[in-house]
Image (tube, rainbow, N blue to C red):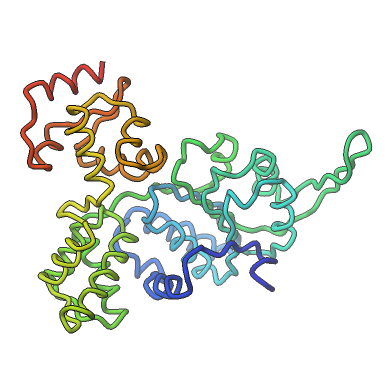
Amino acid sequence: MSEEDAGIVAPAAGAEDRAYEAALRPKTLDEVVGQERVREQLALVLEAAVARGSTPDHVLLSGPPGLGKTTLAMIVAHHLSAPLRLTSGPAIQHAGDLAAILSGVSEGDVLFIDEIHRMSRPAEELLYMAMEDFRVDVVVGKGPGATAIPLEIPPFTVVGATTRAGLLPGPLRDRFGFTAQLDYYAPAELQRIVTRSASLLGLELTARGAAEIAGRSRGTPRIANRLLRRVRDYAEVRTAGVLDLEAARTALALYEVDDLGLDRLDIAVLRALCSSFGGGPVGVATLAVAVGEERETVEEIAEPYLVRLGFLARTPRGRVATPAAWRHLGLSAPAVAEEQLRLGEE
């Protein structure tokens, strides 16, 4: 069966990137670093289903990008020794798109739907019935002459992934028997991930080098592995392949990733907020124009991490820089900074 027949949506990355990511993905729950509570809960769900000889409950994985939702979906299929079918919410714009995918599902299959909150409403309604009753009604024709043909589907497991669980309709969310919220990783966990990745790639990375990369990875394994790749490139060209603390620091400085993991866009947002707008409050659209980016880029990529660090506050009146943001930029916070933050929140 081809990837198109299976409803697989191939990632946009090149063959080298896909091979790199595939080589680093854990294959079992025991290989996963971090997310202990989620791993334990998911293991119980899967082992109980295997012991009963039944299909596991549908699984919903939510959390920010890069925390391992796709990896866990692959592990679910591996644990069940079942085929994995991959698609995404944006690829399912019509109920017929989903019906075509479901018509090829076999008993015990795992259907992974990434960004499931972006499915069209007609497709969501069709998925309700498929998940609960293992059947769908395929409508043939239009208007008064339309006929609904019931299509029975063998028991299967849906694994949905979402970065915005709040956008999922209640009826769809309620049909998942197990819901897991993935959290950001601690620096020690990321160091283990980076060390493991370096070992799999045959790289000699020192412990201090791994710690440096982990500390700048924003709590996200995907970013940690991406930074490892950049440090590897630098080391191969400039330091004869030596991946130590100095190589990591120099490489990450070259790629404009600072000690806290802030990149060029993050720093640009903070500088615009503090230097151009006096710390705010300022609207996100105005802030985006100031840094030459789209509003969505600032709102979805830069802001979440800045808020997590306590550098930026979202208020009803606009974005406001905190005193910590001024200090990180090496600037003296004005005496009114605390007052601006208080007024912005009112």
